[in-house]
Every structure is written in C-alpha cells, then in structure tokens.
Length: 216
Ligand SMILES: CC(C)(COP(=O)(O)OP(=O)(O)OC[C@H]1O[C@@H](n2cnc3c(N)ncnc32)[C@H](O)[C@@H]1OP(=O)(O)O)[C@@H](O)C(=O)NCCC(=O)NCCS
Image (tube, rainbow, N blue to C red):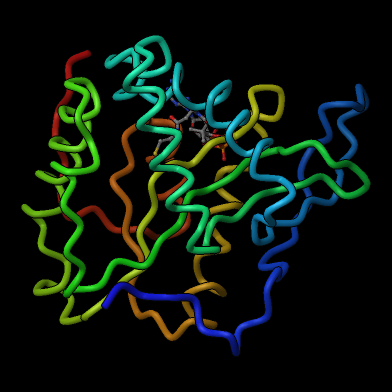
C-alpha cells in the first residue's frame, strides 16, 4: 500500500521559521521566513517555480533539456502533480509576502511501493533521468542499510533565483527533522545532484552513502 499522510497531523502546517537576509533591502537587514505545507491554491505557482527556477539550473534536468522538450516537460509536470497530491511538498515564504521563495518536493517511500516508471515515463530524456536516480537509490538500498520500511525522500529542492545565496536551502532542509518527527519517520534521504544542495545538506548533518561523478 502506498503511504498516505495521516489525518492526525495538522494540514497545512508550518514546519520551520528562520531569519535570513532580505533581497528587497540594501542594508543587509534580515527578514523572517517560514516553511510550510504547499496548499492547493499555490500549485500553479509551485509549477512556475520549478519550471523557472529548477529545470534549467538543476544539473541533470538542465543537461537533459527537460524544459525545452515538450514531451519531457509534460511528463515532469505530471510527475510533480502526482507528488503534490500526497500533500508532503513544502514551500517557503518571506513573512508578509505571497511570493514563493523556495520549495522541496517531498514524498514518503515505502518498501512495498510498486511504482512502474516504465508506464508513467515514455520520453527518452525523462527515462534517462529516472534511470540515473533509480540506479543511485537501488545501489544504496536504504531499507536494508538502515533497517527501515519507509523513509522521507525528495524529488527537487528549488530556491527562487533572487533569494539564492542567503542560506534559504539550508533552512528548508532543516524542516526535514520536525517533519520526520511528526510522521514517525526515522530516516530521510535525497539524491543531492547539485553542489549548491550538497553543501547545505552536509552542513546540517546529512551523511553521504554514495557519491557518483558526473562530468556534464
Ligand atoms: C541549489 C539551491 C537549492 C541552493 O539554494 P540556496 O538558498 O542558494 O542555498 P544556500 O544559500 O542554503 O547554500 C548554498 C551553498 O552552496 C554554495 N554554492 C552554491 N553554488 C556553488 C557552486 N557553483 N560552487 C561552489 N559552492 C556553491 C554556496 O556558497 C553556499 O555555501 P555557503 O553557505 O557555505 O556559502 C539553488 O541554487 C537552486 O534552486 N538551484 C537550482 C535547482 C537545484 O539544483 N536544486 C538542487 C538539486 S538537489
């Protein structure tokens, strides 16, 4: 059975708040930010964020030119919609603003999940992308390695270009801890595919189980 968000955890919930520099202030003043569950009314904006601030920048999607190949783009949006439906995606806002500062596509992966990507993904570029990620995940085998039957995984961390370099991704990743606690999950893992996410992950204590070189 695929995992479903239990009703006893409030939704939408604010998971994390923090202070970081405000890009709209020249004096280096800090703003307050909050990380919370994505709600249905912001799904279009989340798709826009991932389209404009993820696809051309994340190394594997950029290399695959996913945004510029219509069948691949259609599939990736469909994939995101499937992830959004699970109500685990988190987004970041600056206090007092509705602009999406960043987001992380989260999902709970269970040992009994039987997702048949061959049925879902038909475009060659997306198939390659999935294959790389599946290879990394299968090689590590987190279920055996950590003795868990489920864990919190992620399919994309994005920070709006104008907010980058302020520690926002690092803070969004910190929300994983209260999320795991609330859902009784003992493990979270991600295939961090960019130096800009590997550095924040290492900073807050993610440990590396597998490293693969990628010359693109
Ligand atoms: C990766 C991303 C989420 C980082 O967001 P961010 O809010 O700027 O990240 P942070 O400020 O918390 O931290 C980034 C760190 O990486 C470093 N960094 C970023 N790009 C780098 C590069 N090309 N080379 C070396 N270091 C780099 C920054 O200096 C910073 O480290 P520091 O705090 O020690 O200075 C953002 O750039 C993004 O959305 N990229 C496009 C999508 C993507 O690649 N997502 C990650 C896939 S898992």
